[in-house]
Length: 165
Image 1 (spheres, one colour):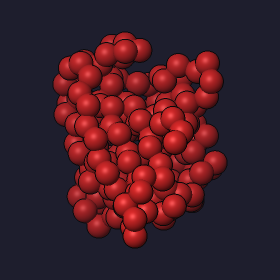
Image 2 (tube, one colour):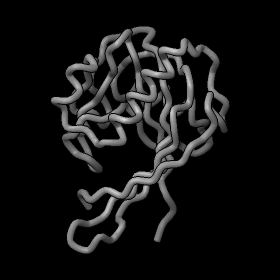
Image 3 (tube, rainbow, N blue to C red):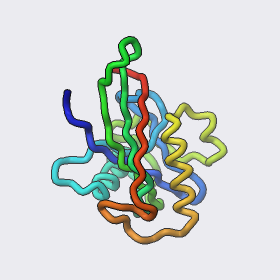
């Protein structure tokens, strides 16, 4: 058994549109998701979020708040054995500059309107996080998030998913 992997995700909003990437690597290969990835040793979560956003999409943004912390538990279909555990720290951000260009782990990157999201293959938690970010953005939050607690405090959610591995 190994330790969970600390990772970040970013819901980058440009008006009513949200920036998504199509995953080029497991887990969730080929699915649309939030830009993000692993936190590097000694790196703050906020800094990792902005770095991953730049690396995967070429887009610059400002963080407007912490949305949630989600446990992504991935299991083998046949045995239900856990093969991956990611602690996902999801931030909301406002787009500042740049047009999306897929880079790093992303196969594609693009802004989508809320009406277009239903047609995309996404994890249910991703959809929930996007909605929460839209609500946070509508409040006009401009304060940088605390490294430990966001606007509404931390809320834990655990999801067990069957997938690759």
